[in-house]
Length: 176
Image 1: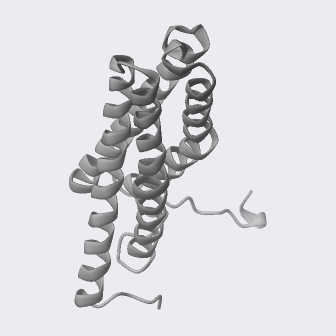
Image 2: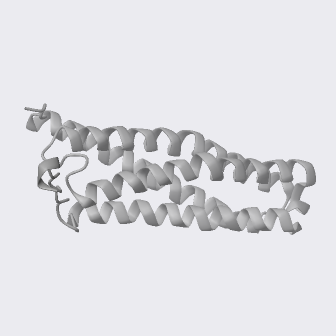
């Protein structure tokens, strides 16, 4: 029989999971709001300050909570009755969590750094450049998508839709 968490231990892991998710959502919202307000920067110094704040949020309120969410989610699924691959909603949450983390690592980090680099070299004039606007637009769209995924995952955690994954019975060679 697989290891199962006691109720007290499960509640501790659930609390850690909820705190990590809340922090990740808050960080994502913060990044999105700062990203939107980049367009209102009065000067290059203010623009650089906003981008610096975005990098701090990314580094401290996105990466670690995302990792904590992933780890506690996996622990909860394998150490409780839900299982990692028993229910569609658990698998969907795992896929969306991994996708959101990978999008942050491979796209949003680079785009935010690119905006900071453009601002460093051009100051407030960076706002008028096509490169800045395209990258900024990608950051806004992608951050919105990530926030939508996170909120959707919260909803399916409570609704637990889609049912259980049906096990397919393997046929023995003599049955074919």
